[in-house]
Image (tube, rainbow, N blue to C red):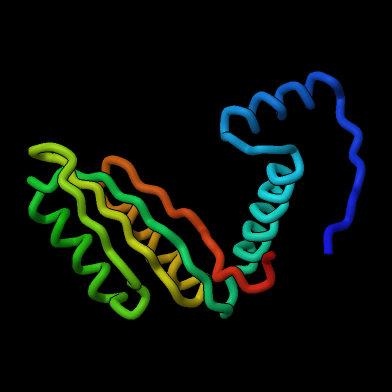
Amino acid sequence: MLERIGISLEEDLLAQFDRLIAEKGYVNRSEAVRDLIRDSLVQREWASRGKEEKVAVVTLVYDHDSASLAQKLAHIQHENHRAVVSALHVHLDPHNCLEVLVLRGRGRDISAMGDGLVSTKGVKYGKVVPATTGEGLR
């Protein structure tokens, strides 16, 4: 069941929002607002970092010629093999690799693992993106 609500926004803020949702391809404001609400709920879910099961995506870009770095990253993944649901390795060019990992487990555990991967010396770019199991979201 859908509920209708009304919100008041300054004209300039609404114009910026309309440009944003057009750039992202939303068909209407309602769907864009729903996504913003869902994102806030996922962020709140992650703020607890408790014992509940969570999922996250970790993105890493690094130079594969650094043998010790690739070995360190693989070691962290093997130490946490139960958390690694899936891994994708892409050769970006003759030297750089992109690795995308899907992690699942207790929030604090996979957050610590993701942060450990991103902060490994030699990683050129890394980001942990909290996601959700979808439980409780519609």
